Length: 324
Image (cartoon, rainbow, N blue to C red):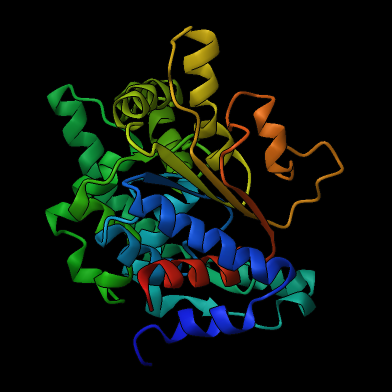
């Protein structure tokens, strides 16, 4: 593939409707960076299991992403794929599975995410045995860390390299750990490792307090945003909906309305890729202008909503920004 061929293709063919918005949003992302703006990317859904790391990791390495907010599932599933890729099972006929076939997958320790089954033993339990060690170390030393910091400790220690089954350049968590990229993980307890941690706490092995909370994430984010929202400000690139996006975008009205701080910049760019319907009271499906009324975006903030499949659209936008 020649340099710039993906970008040239979509510039030639993506001219109308959602396709045109892909171009507009990608060009707006690039323009925001060119004006020394920073960008937050939020990951909902199962984007890590969709192997978004193949493009997102390079975005991180090239400093085109400055902070990530993600679900606990996306945090861990990139690492699951990193250490157990060869054991994954793809089920392209997933729409036709009977309840009995679903039970058979469970009995064989496969947990299905649409057409992809994550192997429990090789992914989840393999990671658990090493995560327990870092939780124990924090306990012994009287330390507390954010969930993503425990993952960074594992990745940077090199202990997981013995299991790598993909090129680590395609893991966005490896790229993030190398950069010590800021990550916010609201609702981490709603994840496999979060459940595993709760189980160990119930067994009396650890105290819940060794893992910093969502409130502490918000407090940290308030300080980070205040420090970095200079120049052209911070943009917000939202993949999907849910807590990964809803949580961090609220930091701006909190700074304005709850802390009564003056001259805090609003988010200076907004794009969401979503298939959520806008007419049922869904915040995830709200049009960007609704966010003006909540003190998150301004009248002149560039705003884009792409009503499409993020597994198709996000890699194309990243390819455009990367000049592929």
